[in-house]
Amino acid sequence: TQLLEQSPQFLSIQEGENLTVYCNSSSVFSSLQWYRQEPGEGPVLLVTVVTGGEVKKLKRLTFQFGDARKDSSLHITAAQPGDTGLYLCAGAHAGGTSYGKLTFGQGTILTVHP
Amino acid sequence: KAGVTQTPRYLIKTRGQQVTLSCSPISGHRSVSWYQQTPGQGLQFLFEYFSETQRNKGNFPGRFSGRQFSNSRSEMNVSTLELGDSALYLCASSFSGGVETQYFGPGTRLLVL
Image (cartoon, each protein chain N blue to C red):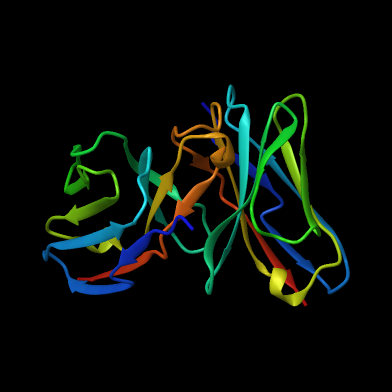
């Protein structure tokens, strides 16, 4: 089973604090995507990482893909109330049995208080 | 470029009925994947279609089925609805269904009474 363990499940912080969300697996992924989802809406893509050791920055968000492509992290600097939402990591494997299939972590519900 | 669209956005059905959900992918994308999202199980993969062929299937009962048309639009059908089928159903499209990015639609919220 190709599982993605995401932690923490819940995060409640004050505006201006920093936070990190982790995504870990025992299997190697060919690519990993991070999404943010609002209640009742579909996940919106934040970033896709494909190379081991890759670091991508999106304004106050920094994404890292582990060297072995088994883990990833999302770091938010100086969180704002607008960052509130469900953050999901999702991994993809290459190969015929994996066509079109993303394996999702359980998600992290982030609440940023003003 | 228009994003992934799904219709309807909301549905209320009763047990035993069947339902058909529709998904239009991003123009040029030929792969459509379907997912079920529930509070308890999170996002789970249902199946994937490419060029009108189902290439991959998740661990769901045969009551869940789908198809894809020549214009890449896809439908999924759930027959003999059960209370546990209440969920947000999401479709995602990508160019080829490989390891590239999938883009999600807004989802269809299904409530089974």
